[in-house]
Image (cartoon, rainbow, N blue to C red; front, top):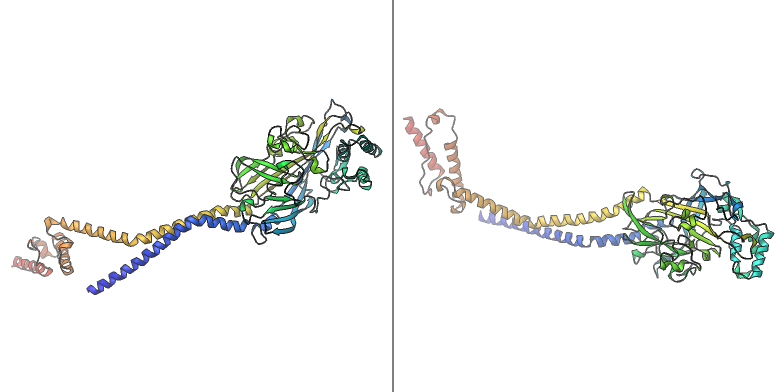
Length: 568
């Protein structure tokens, strides 16, 4: 019997040791997993988000899955005959939107592992969306004659002889201050102009005149072309995810050459990604090839897009300042600083006096709005903004809005531009607004859940490991407590009639005593249904104080003799 008990004890001890050891290992695993899970998660995210042909984001980067729309608004000049009258202002009527479906793609993709970058060109196909438009491509628009103005502005600083030749050309071909064309001609189809034809056929002005196109149209040659916006080189984020989508060079140069100093650097984002973990109060940069510069967007507020918390960065007064309000923007003046609110991109647009602004001169000096009639700037319709998900740097919503203006001013030696007011004339504005799809938003929502689930898993492993590690000690402690409670009860029973468990010399004696107590309880406390015992309730079990030699047999004999005596 002792050998059997000893073997059973050893088996229990071995089982407890195995459970405790497994619990220790599981708890240690939970601690280590919890400490390094976020690093593991970031490593997996890094592998999936870095630009490479085999990563998850590549296809969405190359061909965006969202349907893009380009909405174009044109200003119809209703009183062009009164332009020379200094008592009247140009009256403008906004027409549109003329909506085009944009199908963008990236072509000529080349990977550069040496500096972890990728080179590509952008190509877009545009399809007119009649249902989404508030007009037809056959609508006629009266607007400023951009061809004649560009020719005159280019000759502004030439010698009087050369400038006189331009003046003769303008008169010879009957150029006016304004033109009337269809929307289709003004946008993608373009229209021919004799001044362009002469400049291309008779390059008598040499390098002073650059004629890039055979027609004029605001989006002429853009449809289906991969050459108009230049060659982009951006970082892939393979070595550092914070550099994902950031510009390295444009047209193979890290400096555009169109602005001095740091204003001409090709930096910021190419548009698809922003730096991860942007901070409220900070800013992000967006490189815009049509303006040959980076546009800073400042933090505006925190928003919720499709259930995702994100930061909104908007183009404020700093974005369109020329140094009058923010001295660091002085290098964007382009030679002649003007009041804050427009960006001089003449050098980027072949010398034409083109100035970009937000629609209706939003966030610009009131000086510009007061020059014309018909403009009503407001934040909801004219703000340029980008809402960025901070964990990934992915834009959730973008509203890119710009307005094209041309500076009309008196030019000495050019009859058409004498005795006229100096005006920044609005011609066209466009917006491209896109919002993340619910499906893509759901995928982004999974990222914090996966991170949280990893921490929960680590916590569960630690908790289960601790329970297993402490199971045997706790079980033994509880057993000891139960034994102590039993002993205390035994010591307080009936004036010390019963021994404590520790006072018994053997297990057999303990069992015998337990049987005696059971018998005592049944005889003294529970009445039997027998009439004989009902009359003889005084029967007792006689026990000595020592209780050393008593047994169940003695108690039964005493009970039997007492009953017989009473019966006689």
